[in-house]
Amino acid sequence: MIKGFKDFLLRGNVVDLAVAVVIGAAFTAVVTSFTESFLRPLIGLLGGGGETGGSFEVNGQTFAWGDFVNAVITFVLTAAVVYFVVVVPMKLILERRKRGEEAGPVAPTQVELLVEIRDLLRAQQGQGAGPDPIGPGTTTLPGQL
Image (cartoon, rainbow, N blue to C red; front, side, top):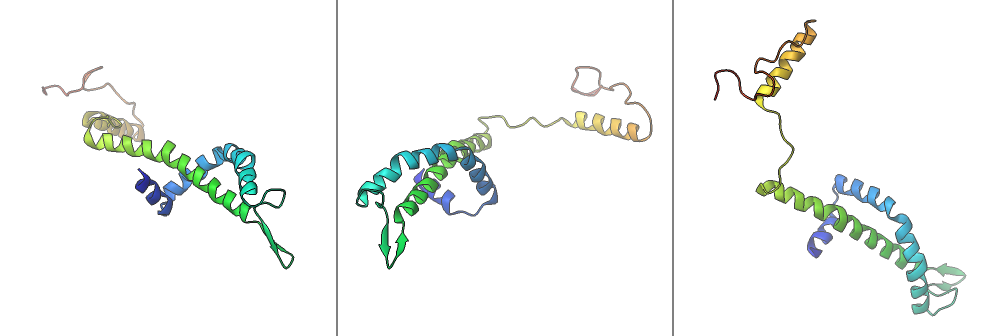
């Protein structure tokens, strides 16, 4: 599962990116609250505590490494939520459908398609749909078993 998560993070699939953006946007408030309430103070303590914890200054320039670490952790948390809540369940559903354990969408029968084509052709010619040749509720043509 971790390998799949790593592959997900490093792959450039557009659909996965779109899913990540949508789900990531939905979890932004929760993740932001978590990082602001717990991670920022923890990183500040690890970096020396106080208001300047998680940063250092060189020649008047402030390097806020704590903010960068917060952003990386926020990204990994968001990606993990997308992976474990959306990608893994979808992968399981697709695998079940391949094995035949879970039914996919039901396709129309040939007769249903032919009746629809007939009705569309009649509609184009200005005629009504007409009676159903196989009768109501039947699935086979007359003469078929």
